Image 1: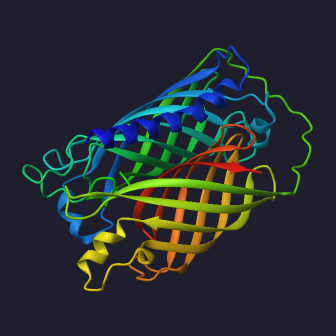
Image 2 (image 1 turned 90 degrees about the vertical axis):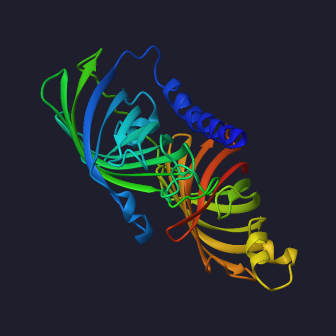
Image 3 (image 1 turned 135 degrees about the vertical axis):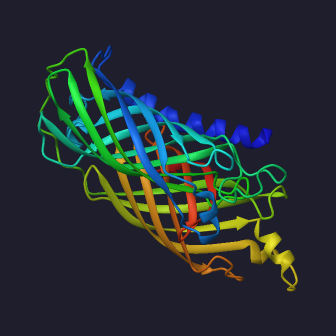
Length: 368
């Protein structure tokens, strides 16, 4: 358990570092911010039939947000229509105090404006990624019926469509509908994960300059050029049954991204991995063991959404070499990358096979 906690500490440090860097990139000191509070009601989505027994009632909760407003002082802020960047503290009562308890999460996020610039109303896509604490995870003696979450600490993802309506220069009405996901990427089993849908309603109060002046400059078009990357990653995975050995997995990926504009990159790539967790599957198989069966190699389509130094990669790939084909031929990836320097990349991604999470990948890379 000590090692697991250390990995999540590293995850949190990597996660919060790019957010702090983005905030520091704004004019300082910056006294323009919003404090908001929202209430939530929703439900847990039973994405597996064998977890329906965990759903006893609706989700209820609340959140507090500390929101930084951008004014266009940096080119990327104008490119993304003056997004907001916030930090959220969230509480969910999961409707099953005996087997699930509560979820406490803290995560940075960004509000990406979807509508045209309007001082009275904004329609946003909120993207957040952080850390969650589940109070009642699986325990083989006291909570063996919780087959969804095997650890206290978990990764947390929030995707939300929300709107903000200015009631006055100081007060803002907020409402939204969103999806949240909590899981540990199979560092500890069981790990079906929790998928939660909720609606929220709340208010925010503007502190500081209530007439924020937005800067508008002429910005040169993005250079349409290729950016090759090479990234090395490592992950940890526990196999069923819970409490058994953890295995390491190693990967190397080569990505080729082409700038279509400042926000989006598309391309392709090659990758290979050496996954020690397959030893367990091979051990359960009557076939003789071979290290070649731990290797996988594939090709992929790559997309990346970019905001300043932060990018959200999404990969869709197919294995060209996979001797045993335990997880199927297709793999997918989503996560977070941060350009520490012009060339150095910090990587936290989750590799999956369709809707089944495999493991978190922690790594560093180099971009030409």
